Length: 123
Image (cartoon, rainbow, N blue to C red; front, side):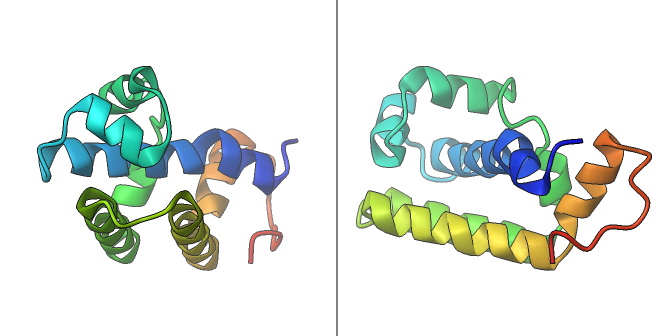
């Protein structure tokens, strides 16, 4: 069984990036190249997030209004161009902590491992 940290790295972080990418491209009309430069990732990665071939588990996060508000606020800060890589990482950590607190990882973890009955590892 994968520990929750591996679930976060494999599913949650890519989903957060996909949602931020969507915001940057649609709400702020950035090009894929501009978004990639702001996020410090390749344009190809932006393209994959945009197509949801990466970060396909966005629906888990989209259902939660507080998480979506945090993601949209971060996208807004990134679009303004005044976020350093360190600040972006710090905001990702805050979002991830809130996801853990709200037990959103638990549902994904149970979907991946149906035999997982009770677990309090994430919170």
